[in-house]
Length: 261
Ligand SMILES: NC(=O)c1ccc[n+]([C@@H]2O[C@H](COP(=O)([O-])OP(=O)(O)OC[C@H]3O[C@@H](n4cnc5c(N)ncnc54)[C@H](OP(=O)(O)O)[C@@H]3O)[C@@H](O)[C@H]2O)c1
Image 1 (cartoon, rainbow, N blue to C red):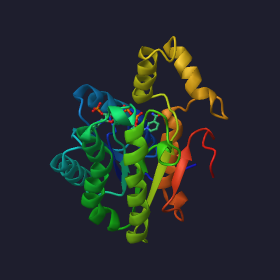
Image 2 (cartoon, rainbow, N blue to C red):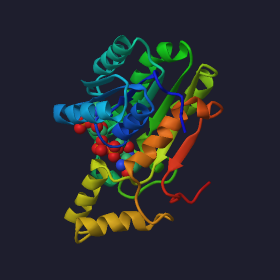
Image 3 (cartoon, protein in one colour):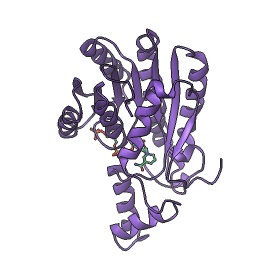
Image 4 (cartoon, helix red, strand yellow):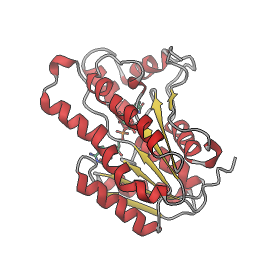
């Protein structure tokens, strides 16, 4: 299916690997110009190569820390300058530390808020005038933890819910010019998940990585954890005019593991 994104311009925060990169790749495969940011130069270099191979559009891979407002604004401005406009924003982030409530301190909470919430506030505020000029989209990559809490992830369970409130509000305030949606990933095998499984091995929850991987996939009706590409394809679809009547939606992409409707 041609999503009609060829020649459009997109930026993906925290898009140098994982779900952000998979989303940028899906947009690039459709012919969009794509910009990604991250903090690790090697990840950015690899992402630039991956994205250049994925499609015919232009690629910008830029070092920017999404917990720093000025760097976020510079990333948005550089993208607009490079591509001559901006049609699509996808927000991703690193994951906040795992652990139970009693092992968190104030700094953990404020850091998680900057990483997960303020990064979206800064990005969408700066991008809005460009998106509104001719029509655009925002897709927030969050987590299924916003709908069903996940044991041992108190920061994700709590802080991410603000992004859903923001998404729903923006979907109304930015209509009809800008559509705003969120995707709620279940487990997809990225470095974030590899890290969480390895922490589980260290805590003695699994004997080996493979056992952890199997365990993470076993509670899913589809019987496995997802491939990041399976999330990226949905992000590209939501960004396209094929989803032109879809806004304000928080869509789980989790192999059917969420029990609530
Ligand atoms: N994978 C899953 O199954 C899953 C499930 C539910 C929710 N999620 C959530 O979805 C988001 C993405 O997950 P993922 O699996 O793709 O994670 P990942 O593979 O660890 O990738 C995280 C990305 O975020 C970037 N990043 C981290 N901190 C940053 C910062 N301060 N400024 C700019 N970039 C930053 C990293 O870039 P650098 O390394 O270059 O800094 C990397 O590109 C996370 O919030 C995660 O918790 C993931």
